[in-house]
Structures are given as structure tokens and as C-alpha cells.
Length: 417
Image (tube, rainbow, N blue to C red; front, top):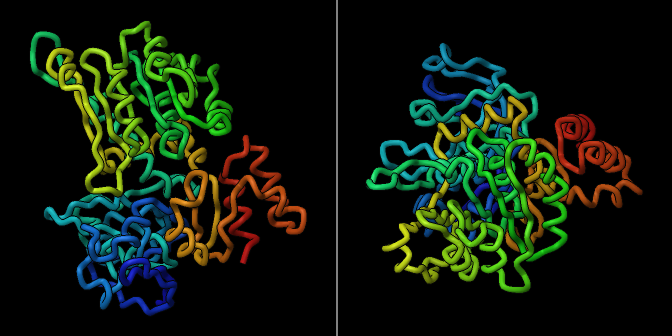
């Protein structure tokens, strides 16, 4: 079967190519990709080429398919897996498969599997590690954003706190405690707000910061103070771009500080701000991955010693985190559509990936079987003045609080080239 895919050959060398896939082996599965969400990790892989830890050294001779936040359906199932998977099953994949300690991962390391393709071959190690996940929802894009959502779930689970009088660690955020999400209205920050309000363990106070009033206003429209209160969470949005940000943040806790602080941007002042607002036994989660290998920031070790403050870093979720994400979406408890701000076709992958840090907004969602320039959802109305497709899409998303949705996905896939 022929596939069309975006392949990485080296630093900044991405190519959209059509080529023949080999016949699958008895321990492999042939799958159709429908949607893929472009991640900053793909930009980093393209920027670094073979220097990236997950990209093979011989990528120039054996290019890999990029994209690791994908969803689709199974087309052909090898004999070994026919008792577990069926043709037509929808699926998502946890790409951090950790097969026998290897860093190899779909979207970084494989010739025949990655999200930015029309058809792929799923290798046996994905199934052997339990990372081919059944997906019951009829909306494909939820399966694509399940991977970034799992990173958030994993981060909330990774935070820890001590038990008074002992050194036994209690995992997870403090239920009913005080939480701050710093630089928290980007795509991953929005997902973190959603999970904090609607997840199984919730803070009593949730403060979300940014320095952009427009971005804060959009977040407040998506996650209202009233809805948060109905779920037992006092939600506060705070612009930290002026005044004494640390004092303003601490005042919201009556000076006691925060139990859990999530730093959603690899920015030195933001990290140091997070350190300064930790309460006793407070945990700072450095969520956002920096590109600079020497990135560092000041941390108050007096408080580490006498106040039991501590730091944790997370880089991706695990399989259980992804299963939890899928379950919460299937139950309608979380809606990661808020992360998505742009839609495009497979022809948009290369320019989007290579320029991702320069493109404002949140997640860029790709449908691999269509051709469409990357388009901001906010621009649908203007484009709709001359294109009936965008006029109808604009009408649909406006009926869903300005968010991408199942109805919009179905309409797009049925009506675009």
C-alpha cells in the first residue's frame, strides 16, 4: 500500500513524500492515520536532526516519519494480534513505549510509523508494551490530543508531598490545597486548568497567571469561575505583568504560599517566581521542556532545608496517564478542544513544524488525508466571506464556544479535498 508522509532526513530537512509500505508481518498492524497534533517536540527533532536523542544516527539514509500525537483506525491486523484487535477499531498510541529501555519512539525513530502520514505500520513493540490503546470515541481529534493531555495527567500524579513527622512521600497534588499554574494559558496550561477543575483530585484554590490580558480573557471564557466553583475550586486569573507579582500571588493565599506550583514556560523569572511562592512542603513542577541544555534558575535552598520545598520535572505521561485521559474524554469530563487553535492538512505539516515557535496560539491539528493550509480557527469568519467551507466551519465552531468540535471535524472531512 502506498502512503504519503512527512519524513525527517536531518536538521531542518523535512520532505513530504509518497512511497510504498511493505506488506505487514504477522506481528504488525497496518493502520490509517486520520489526525495528528503537532508538538514542539517535533520541532525540536527537526531542529536537531540526528543529534536528537530519539532520532537515529542514520536518519539521512533511513528517514523517519514525524508526528507522535495521532489517532486513526486499524486496516489490517497481523495474525498474532487478531484476538486483541479488529479491523475498523479506532486507536490512539502512547509514543513513549520504552521498549527494553530504548528511547525509540513513533514519530521520531521509525521508518514506517509516525502521525504525519496517511497509512503506517505499527511495529510489534507498540503492542507488546501495551501502548496501542483502543479508542471508543467517534471523534478523531480527541485521540490526538490525548497524548499531550496525558503529559498533564502525569505531571499532576508526579507531584509529591511529605507526611508530617516522617519522610514518607504522598504522591499527587494536595486535594483541596492551593495551586498556581504559572504562564498557564497556553495550550498545555489550558489542559491543566481543565484537569485541575474536572479531574479526580482538585485543589481548593487555583490561580492561573499570564502577562497577556487577551489570552487570560480567552481562558476565563473557556473555564469560568462559576463552573470551577460548582466543582469545588476557587478559580482566580491574575496578570503578573505589572506590580509585585510574588506579593500578589502570596496575598491570594493569605501569605501561606502554594502547595503545588506548575511552571508552564521555560523562562528563568517564571521558575524563580514559582520558587518564591511555595508554601511549606510545596512542590514546584517544572513542566515545560527547555531547548537550551544549560537552562538554569535560582532556587532557595534555605527553604528546601527548613520548609521542605522541593521540585519535580516531568517529560510526558505514561500509558496509564493516557488511558485516564481517554477515559475522561469519553466520559465528557474534560474537553481538550480548548488546546486547539489551528487546523490544516498534510501539506501544512512541514512549514508548521519548522516554524512552530513563531506561530501564535495553541495546538496545530493536522488531518492527514486532506490538503489545507494551516488556518487559525479565529480566521474562519474572514475566510468564510469568500469560501463557503470556512463559512460553515465558522458557524459550527461559534455554536461550540469558538472551539473545534466533532461536528466541525465531520464537516471538514466530508467537504474538503
